Every structure is written in structure tokens, then in C-alpha cells.
Length: 123
Length: 107
Image 1 (cartoon, chains in turn purple, cyan):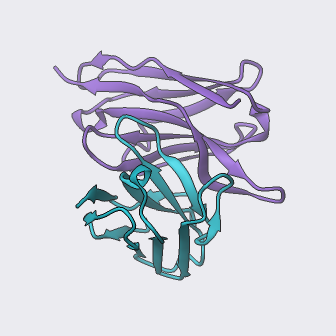
Image 2: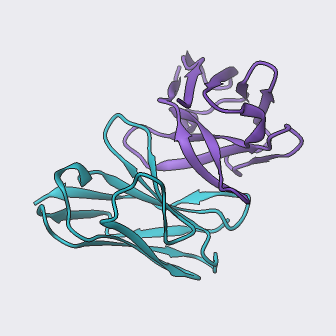
């Protein structure tokens, strides 16, 4: 059974830093791209970042580019999101999500999600 | 970035109704569109990918169509378990974007 378990969400002051983690199990972690997707309270979904299966390629939403860094440790089946220079608008539930692959190709969509970890940026 | 616009934002319907949700892209995305269902307090669930391909395990009452800039999600006969919020998402580029969501409520 695929499981994604996020951790690290807390209340942090504006301008602060935070590192989120996602522990993956139930699938061959280093076969798949991984993503972070967030959802502000009562709002819609916003894709945050993508990392390729080997960590060699990373992509970011414009709203977080230059402030957030995605990384992974395939030896630990873990995904991370380093968040710096946090703003009030970064307040959200952060989901870790597994990239989708068919038998022939992989795509920028998400077939498994964690339950999320809540980040609150407030003074 | 490609903007995704969903309509309506809220939809009131009864069990057994045929429901259609529209998603429009600000530029052509070919068929690189997915649909998700999200229930309160839960993570989203993938329903459809590549505009019309049904994800494994998803009931056949869900269907998707469209290409280019206009897409639809149709629920042929609304069931009690289908009251939820639905999101479209484009994956034509590496800057992935979602629509604003459509909440399907009980009439």
C-alpha cells in the first residue's frame, strides 16, 4: 500500500524558515518524480514544486521560486521542502504527492497524496 | 503560466442528475488535463487523466472530454458519494496549474 506521511508543519514568524519532510513507502521511491502541492485554508489547490526521480531536475511555482528548495534522499525514501523567507501567504496545508506513470510514460499529475502538514506563518 | 478557469464555482444538484463541469485553459494544452475529486478534510483523488482516460478504480459514471482549451467533466448519474469539490489541472508545461474548483452541493 502506498503511503506518504508529511511532517514538519508548525507556526512560524514571517521571514522565518522551515523544513518539511515526507516519508514514502509501498512503492519504489526512486522510480518516480515527487511533488509538493499546497492548499490555503478554505482555498483551492496550488502546485508548489517537482523533483525528478533522481533529483537532477527541479521545478517551482513562480510564487515560491528563489525561496523554497525541493530535495530528496532516495536511500531514505524521503522528500523534503526547505522553505525560507516565509510570508503570510505561504500559510497552507502542504501535501506530498507521487508523480503518475503509466506503463510507458510519466506525467505531471498525482496519483497518491499524503494527508498534509499545516504551515502557519504568523507573528 | 497557463491559467485554468473552471465553471461553475458551485453547482447544486440532486442524486441521479447528470452534472457537467467546464474547465478552460488560457492557451492550448492538447489533452494534458486531469480531474481530481476532493472531499472535506481529505486529500484529492485522481479521477481522469489525459482529458478522457479514467483512472483505475474510478466509477464509469465519471467521464472527461475535450482538447485544446476547453474540457468537461461529466457525472452521468450523481450519487451521494459524489458531493465534493472537483479540480481540473493542466500538465502541458512544468509549471503545473489547477482550476479554482467546482463544489457540487446537494440541492
